[in-house]
Amino acid sequence: MPKLYPMTFEPVYHQHIWGGERIKKAFDRPRAPMRSSESWEVADREEGMSLVANGPFKGRALGEIVQQYGEALLGQGCNNDRFPLLIKIIDASEPLSIQVHPSEESAPAVQGEPKTEMWYLLEGGPVYASFKKPVTPEAFARAVKDKSVADLLQKVDAKPGDAIFIPGGRMHAIGPGCLIFEVQQNSNTTYRVYDWDRVDSQGKRRPLHLEQALQCTQWNDDQDPSVLPILLVDDGISKQWRVLSTPFFTVERLEITDHYRISPNPKTYQIIFHLSGKRKGECCLLPAVSEPLDLEGPAHVLRIFSRSIKELS
Image (tube, rainbow, N blue to C red; front, side):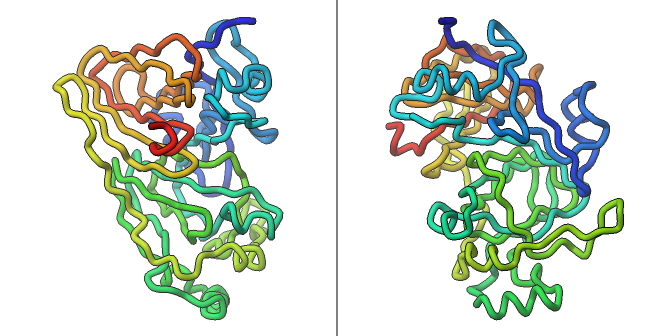
């Protein structure tokens, strides 16, 4: 059986009516469509499956490798039948719908997939997340009817490098101008409640999902959605921040000035996304059992683990 190694993937591009042209330009991707709303960087789904772009597994589907290697890829005790996360780049030239995703608790009731996510802003713009104050379902339904839902939400003028936390049940929307690196549970369940009265190229409105949204929404959620990173290491060679730790993933940011080696962790896979440097825009999966990954600075990267810091310690 071939040994696992750091793998890169062919991006899977998706086109929605709100997408822009920056993914192709910002990351110098000649094979990308001129206009695309999402680039799925690491994905194990029927509607978008990552294919390995390098090494002995080139051309193989991520889902097949997960099935074959299990814990050696995912980490000790990870017996998932598919890759646990979905990693995306989102380009919003227009606002996304105001929407909500189910949590672990509410997903069974609506027969959806739970989805907690985090946004890391590559280019800034307005985002909406959490209520300004607790809301009742009745008041929310009235706001949907009179098209004032956005007025109920906190608006954040996000800047590059900001992070926004969207747990399942948190009402949210991405505003125009945002270019976002998104880390999320492997789910594609979204319940739209307002789509800015937008129509598609055929003059049709996209369907809304108010009934499901009412069952999923956390009505008392008025927390600040912005995340403040914590500086962990500053040794002159690198700086390391913990951006966010959830039960489903942990995100760190590294600032590298010189050669930097990332060793595999037997408890988890690691995903490395290059924010800057010679490999800007590259996304790499480092399996739990693998040869190490060597990086060259100067560069900024994001590193994602499959578990919370508590579970990894």
